[in-house]
Image 1 (spheres, one colour):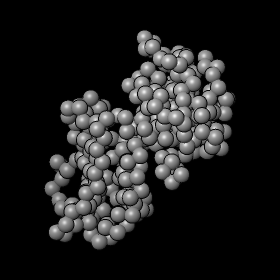
Image 2 (cartoon, helix red, strand yellow):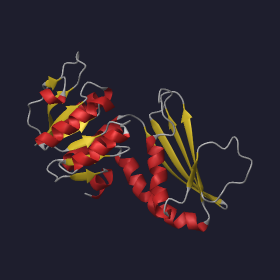
Image 3 (cartoon, rainbow, N blue to C red):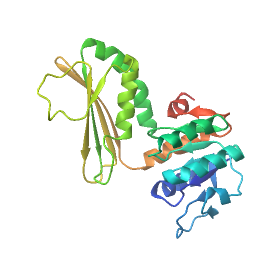
Image 4 (spheres, rainbow, N blue to C red):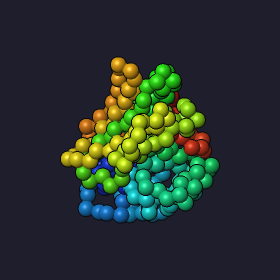
Length: 252
């Protein structure tokens, strides 16, 4: 049985992951970490990771950027692999993530959904066939009205996945309102929609002459990200030091 620590256990994603792990026969929560109290959890909870004295095989992190530094230090000291899901890390923190991966296993991904990460893989093949045939590429992402950043990190990851196939020769265009010119063949439009309670919706459109091919992914709840994180934790437990991502989970 894999023993995990949930870093950020009292947040929405932390509670979602706790429920998923409770129903999984291959992994269990040995402890949680969260500065906020008031939730009755069936496992010991510590306010900071430095206070945690519970042995574990892996840490799943859905916390806040300021807590990541201490988490990385703890994981390196204890040699415990970490599935790092917290976003909004600074450049300095990203360097610390890379340094930590030289001493313990770290898995970091722009999106923990297995479906999105499968899509990243499929898009490379599709773009390699369709773009040379003259297909234009556009990405439209939709999220709830409380999301602060635009475009989403996932939309950018999808764009980057395609762009890597062409030596990053595509220019990302986020707003055409001030342009009065035909669309350049080497531009990739990325549009953001914000409204209601949309969890996450991404369309990658390949528009050619007389035909359009669209790859779509819709998340109906945040549970899809939790399921991916749990799969990642089961994959990462016992792995040697290094930087991993969800493509490693998918490829086994």
